[in-house]
Length: 280
Ligand code: AMP
Image (cartoon, rainbow, N blue to C red; front, side, top):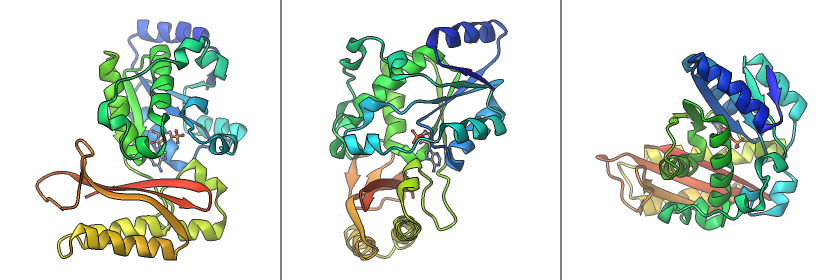
């Protein structure tokens, strides 16, 4: 695996790859890698000649400074996991490399409602920060395919929108959520949970599944209230638990078997914020 820290070196190298007409797949991450990230790498390897991953903890997408300062960093371990998974190139830039010009951090992306609902509402500025880093990364890497996890469902929609706003040609490929044995969606932030907290946090997926399984017999508002009770009994604090049309994230209280619907939730386990979703 070749590691690049400078965008200009990486771009020069990728120029050679393009001249040889090789296809590049890109897996952007913030590190503290787990099997969810590695599933994206595996899928990318199957579909492309060159698999490129990046690790960059993007300061501008954190609306909570504490969350940023406590974000787990396990770089040596990440490098050996990427090497073991057959990643060809790792881009490991500094913040100065990604944001050389202060103006890059003032850009505004017109995301419409998508930028201000759900994660956008509870994490003000978050998706603008995601767009800033993805704008820069996509211009540096210019991949044929971009691999994103369904775990961050709204983020996938935001990045698709960004790609169309910027008139880029990368194809977006999404991969399913990888979970722990107890159902907890894998997340770098899980490293901040104690074992008992992880066990209690498994209630999140259990309740999403329970709502899904009962959707033909009881209305969503009742199911939602009961699920929130169970989550609170497990010591979790629910920020939102909603039912939405998966095509545009418009919220509803009614199940509709004729369209693709999704349950989305954000909860706190102690001070750690966790998100999960389930497509119905
Ligand atoms: P992050 O390092 O959290 O920015 O995530 C990097 C990529 O991995 C994003 O596209 C995430 O959606 C994806 N990802 C994170 N957790 C999982 C998971 N449990 N299963 C599948 N993909 C995931």
